[in-house]
Length: 252
Image: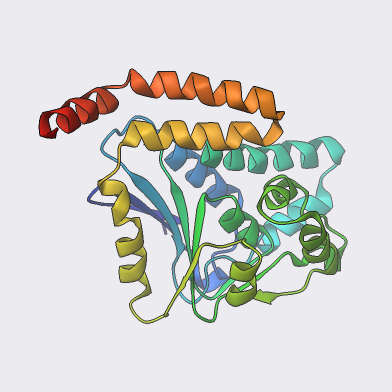
């Protein structure tokens, strides 16, 4: 069985975690498939967004038993290589030229919650549950911490990562971890409607905006302003901007 389904619907690439009998738990095969999919996005200029979703009742329950067994049997260097492989997936998602949208239904726990957190936008169905329960088995949700800390306050992040409790979509929305909640009925249609706005925006402008926002995370104010100036000038030189200005002036 193909553990990651890929489907192009118009200008959107749908990536479906396809291990419903395992609650779409992550393993090496699935992680490598996801990385391969994100590497391919840059070459397809027709795409305007990527949606990550789960088959069956849940989005993703985290690492599967085989992955946990591998951790238990590996030495430090082997575990470090494995962790860096997962970190590479987060890097590919962040460097993806188009918005990456998590469509979460059911549960998104541990690595599954991390996968959703790593997306640019998170949309959730009513009744969805989130959580980073790794500390309950002596594990640390270390890689996703780099993103979570940029999404919520320090105290919220500390609470979620060290208590390991599940929380609702409503709480996730309240603290800024997710963007929208939609009814479970017609959830896919609601997601499609939400992201359809990117069909009307400039791909190059969205890509440059994404680059700028994430690069600003580690910059001092003056450096952030300079980086903004650089991106501003770069955007002006793009084909989309030149056409947009010509169209606007033609209406003036």
